Image (cartoon, rainbow, N blue to C red; front, side, top):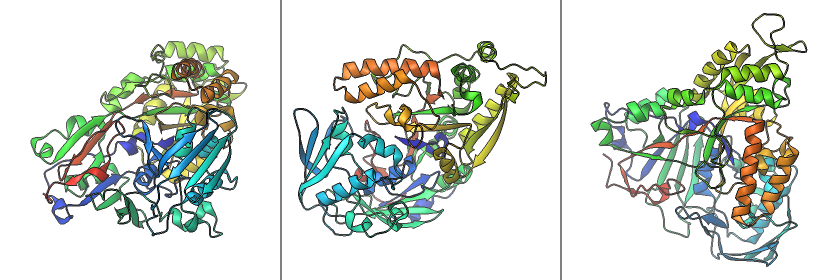
Length: 525
């Protein structure tokens, strides 16, 4: 899973009234808007969706999911075998694959990558959790690698086969893996290779001439970093950008003119994703589930969805992909109900004993800080609404804004009261990384959720290969989250994407878009 901010995903719009600057860009160059700059591009240590969106074209794995069927298919492995007890997975690698610097890819790279994930000095706690039951990874020969599990895990094939891979010959030089220079100039085996990174401005990829497969017709990709949405709008208006995810207001009101539609395609589709408000249960205000539920009752999610997202999306009540069988459709989101919230707060002991308009308990005021990324327009507008609505219930909320890198650091250090974020989900539900109590300290259980029954269900889910039985377990887990409210689950919104008609063969797959299959439309407009 990758952390994302809704406003970074949905951060562009367009007007077509100015001179089209796409004429100065080569037909085979694709300019993509990025709302935030990634910290780095090491696929093992990064948890950011913005980095993953780039790494997906630089790096590859042993297996992948088909873009349409979602079936597991070969990528760097040509085939694999699984032992009858499902504890041993052997991958036979494709031969002749080379890294973008010309060095051959071998089983040693796979073993090295695994060893870095398991290395306690390597900062990749959210990733380590998926390999806790892997007892060994060894090269049987130059092109064969074996993974051995101590316990059965239903995602073992995908996890071992989908393990992020980095080149041993590049990183194994005695340099600290976490701060290695190649974290900002990656070497991969994918269809594109890294060209340059102009800090604060752009990251540029070019077609990898050593790629074994079909070479992409889009030869150059320029990720243009623009945090300020209004500036990004102007750039799109001038034709300086080809691909962006638009904000709902622009989708509904500003991208429907005849002139605009003559230059751009509008694409709308859902991906595994949800946004949320997280309550740090280590804080006295949020340690009681009655309080967390009360706060959810105070968040008018339907109105917020309509006001901030122009109705583009749906309110959710759990953490599984809303269109998957693992999402329990019988559980409806808690309604907006200030009266119920006040009663729950009273039951939890929060009352205005000194009549100053702020609830208190045991001498402590209900006064907390909402932490947000300064680049998120969504978080900015949401926080304003929350502050006003909470104040009506006697809850005082202040707002702290941080640049993305600082914000992520605070998240990892658990240095926050409440935050709003979003999760980009895997196609198969495994709640361990987000919710198991073992992940409270160093994993992605940032809010400190601990529940014994939930832990047991999560552990059973990992060992259950029957999808129907697994679904039942996940439905019960959904019920627990609904009662406990470690998050106020907000909603799942669709990707609202604009793509220049400078490119053909633009297809929306089940997994979304993939620009390595696009083709220039015959020249710049």
